[in-house]
Length: 142
Length: 142
Image 1 (tube, rainbow over the protein chains, first blue to last red):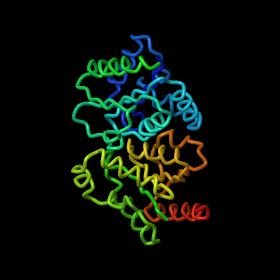
Image 2: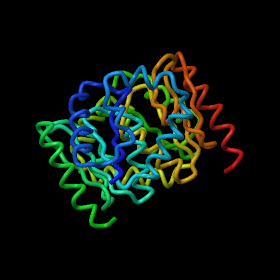
Image 3: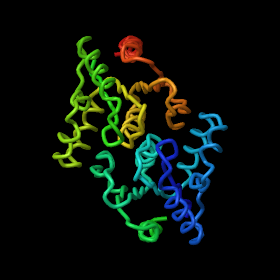
């Protein structure tokens, strides 16, 4: 499957090891992850040299092309919030994953869209497991 | 005009004085601000007792009913990012305001939607001025 992975960049990078574990798990299962570089440590420098319009146009094209969006939402992010809304608007399944105990926006936790799943995890392994469960459910509809 | 004001809640409250100045300026000009309570100091406690689904349903109904959305985006927020995307999807004019020098998401700064204006300010007075300019431009189309 083509999986758009969304995570915080400007909003903080303390969950980077989880982002990397998620991308690794997705690739191990042979999924395509156009945004895999967002999990890398140098992403802030990498993205800062690209024109903002180019990033927007590229990311929106990737969302349109993906089967599902997987978002790590433990840290607040305008970009990830925007992408979740945009994807649901296109009718794409979205998984919003967060560390157990984290406060998340009610625009996510209270969103009744049947295409949105909100799940929590304690470890990176649990996060990967939640993603596998979500993708297994949705691959039936491809 | 009916103005939906969006700001960070879970993502941090250090810009609360600016939020309050914005709401004050909007009310002084006789605009309706359904989300005025989001600028108040006790909003975290106030919103924590309401069911997330109720908040989502209420906020989405308010966005549908507003003429424009004014978002303070200096601090990252999933909810505000979601609301900006949702409003643009509905064809509503959106003003994203941030303190000068703040890094903001490229899904906002690089977004070519003609309905989106991104402006910065140095003081609360300048923020209010930017909003007046934005509303003056858009009231012509009501």
